[in-house]
Amino acid sequence: MAGPLNAKVILARCSQSGKSFGIRIEQRGREWVRTWAFPIDERKAAREGYSASSTSTLSGEDAAYPGCPYCGNKVIAMCVCNKISCVGGGRDYGNYIELTCPWCGNKGQYGAVSSIDVAGGGY
Image 1 (spheres, one colour):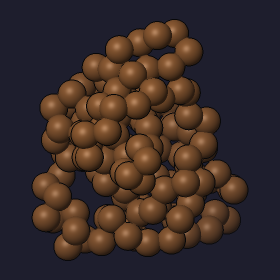
Image 2 (tube, rainbow, N blue to C red):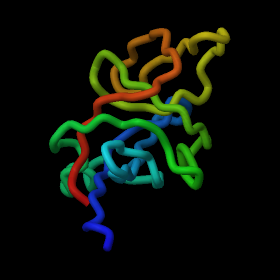
Image 3 (cartoon, one colour):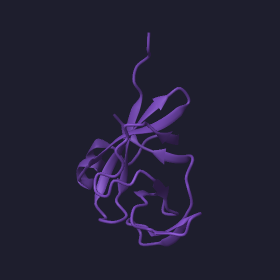
Image 4 (cartoon, rainbow, N blue to C red):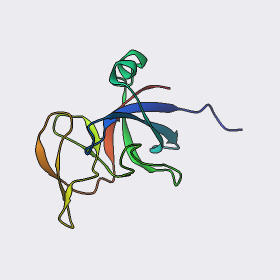
């Protein structure tokens, strides 16, 4: 018998449009995987607590994960401001992507992320 589902939602922004979206993550064994993404208003996300909770290590994505609801990109990055965005629209240099953070405006070079520590609100 399977145990209870443990899922969270984390807040992200599209690096192309700057619009907010939620990323649903689900615990599978010791790993947390991205399972769904959906547009969300930041005020509603704050009321739901999607910006604060315990930290988890995000390990990957489910095969059905659709990516950013605005640009479709499935790759995410965490800026030095500790906020998450998709990396669509960045300038691709092969080993890294140059991207401007849609949260703080910091311009940086982001490589492939295999795991990332995130905070999310309960689901």
